[in-house]
Length: 175
Image 1 (cartoon, rainbow, N blue to C red):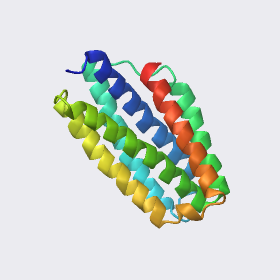
Image 2: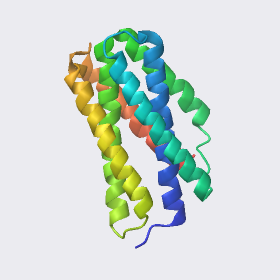
Image 3: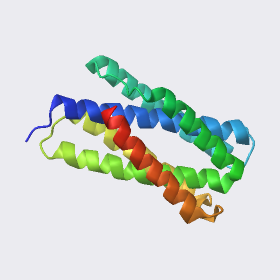
Image 4: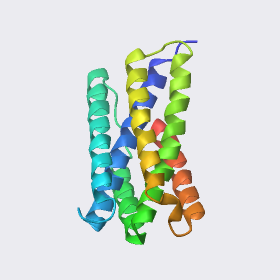
């Protein structure tokens, strides 16, 4: 069965919100770490990619008349606080944050691609999601290579961030 316009709009809305949240996480991390801290250049590069993703979703939303989530101001504050908070715990915790977020985003994007491919519902959106998912997977690999799993209380930190991501996805789809 073909996806409805509302289902497609929910996908676009939540994906734009996620990319916006990611930019805010990296802004928070870089505000604490500065541009010379461990992994700062890597984080800045990831931030630029996320900004590019967000810009493309912004354009798609404008083109298709999709409203953003009303939770955008909350995501701005929460994303920045998460980024700053994990950076305050140290460079490994900042990378643990990236690893946790990207793990959930990989699953989220993969689920969306599965749904879109069931009936080739929106080739343009599918291509964007597939491209961005590959970038997110690179971010995950980089975070793990940079010592994410060495962060203090990694399983607890990662689990809490992943749970928060799943909740944010559900809320942004609907509100």
